[in-house]
Image 1 (cartoon, one colour):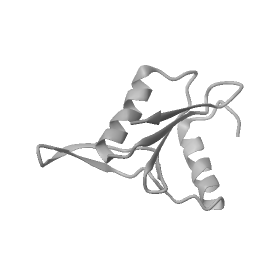
Image 2 (cartoon, rainbow, N blue to C red):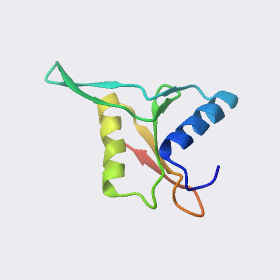
Image 3 (cartoon, rainbow, N blue to C red):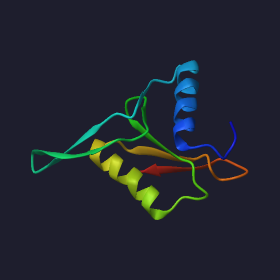
Length: 102
């Protein structure tokens, strides 16, 4: 597709790519948060969970910020997963990605 599109466009494209390549994924899965054994009203919604244990968060921005990295760290903490991928399709001319390990 190239850069310049909204994140929602890349979300749909990745769903097609993952399905065509046989990559197991769940898109926009609602993560329920807990505190001291109690369920919170607040939820997290990562863009993708792949292979039942990898968070994939996509962006369509000029660059990542600390807030984007913190978002993936929070998703990892909420799920007890160890690996997250932060992918930015808006960084022209090349895709930008970071591997985040907890």
